[in-house]
Length: 300
Image (tube, rainbow, N blue to C red):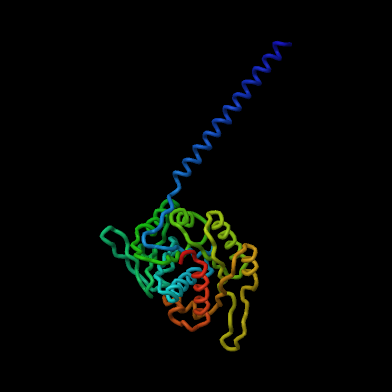
């Protein structure tokens, strides 16, 4: 009987020792993995000459985010004696070339950096300048990240007070590549009043919260339509939802851009409405939003 008990105690000791050994080995593995992940993350470093980076994001496509980004860049440039640049980070569906009426390939500096194309005194860079406008970009994650690195690091921006970045939809590789590579001063979130758009905006806000990027406010696009004949306002996509979400997220609603055919018409022509019709209601709203951003942008 004593022999049996002794054997059981011996086995128990071996199991305990083995368990401690496995636990210790697992802790070592976890520590090594954390160290490798730290090494694998890119170092955040500024873009030479660029003082502030502002992200214009939505989480969802089709909400007019690129139109907002273009008009904000023009409005911010018009308000102060400061230099604004515009980066199109949507590798798969670049919109800036059309919205800014720009085409052609960038010239190169002596050190092989791309020179942004210029219109309305706004230097612009986009993947759309580097590929045929009818070509489809079929890239995996690594190629996309390399493309973003090129747009961030191989462009001769000169001296910019603010680089406005038109972000692609979603919360994936491109977004992470940008926020893990360059210091971002802040972001603004664009949404229409539809529930499906707002759910994606919520995810976008959560992403910025996780990576510690301050969200400067929310912008409601296509908030209402004003009848050109009788002047009556119609909330085509509903009302109050964006304001409600902004309160839930503890964010300020810094602008309401009305739905108007002229905004779409001038955008298709490559002339931002802030430039084409500076006295219009939409242009004035963009100017008000730009003023809000200037007040909230750290160090601007």
